[in-house]
Length: 93
Image (cartoon, rainbow, N blue to C red; front, side):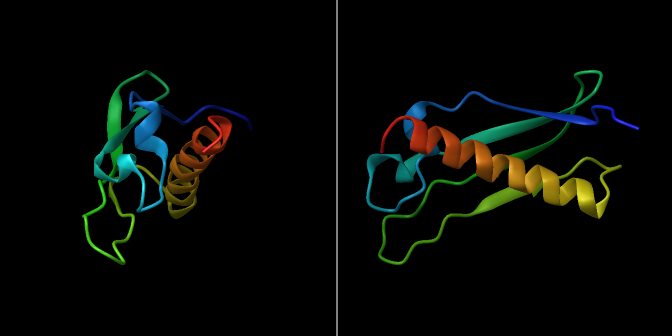
């Protein structure tokens, strides 16, 4: 069986996708909205801006869909990280 269970959308600016702590994007938050197959919002992932201090870590806050299985959760987390890294690399940073 092959069907679409969730979609992820984000409207962050290009700069907000970088994940290093030394560039300007460290202060931006990026929200990834999770939709079900009927385009209803069912969750979100928020990539928080990094704090201006040495050793700050990139963090995500996650609100999973209520019906998400453990496997779904891993796919959603991985998807946000892949979007982040793909855009980061595609703009040549």
